[in-house]
Image (tube, rainbow, N blue to C red; front, side):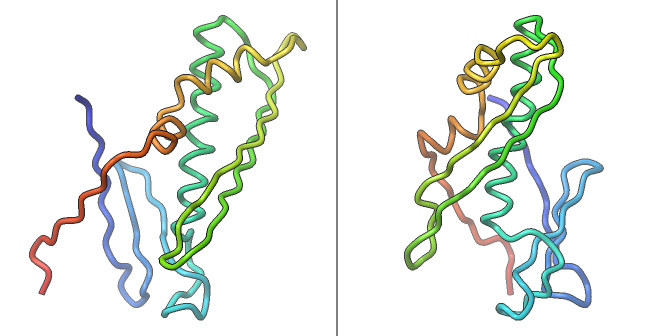
Length: 137
């Protein structure tokens, strides 16, 4: 089984966190004025939507490559619906626009991406999340 680990640490002088994987970084924060947030980065719902849409964008490329289709413009918009206390994502909707370089219908590429999208398939099936305390004082 493959695994991926990311790291997050507080950003000195703020209440935001910086996350990284390899050489790539992202700032995570709350909206300005909310629980010490300064609006310096993405919140959890935005990161969830970005993970879903970003994974699908990559999988459009994987699917097109496998099908021998050249892609042009790709546009993906993701909306997550939030409700409840604690706040939970109740649904996500992804709107996908995808153009092929030769102008052919991109439906086969989109459908193939749908079948291989790790984030969409993982969220749709659900998975356990363990939270373990490690040396916090």
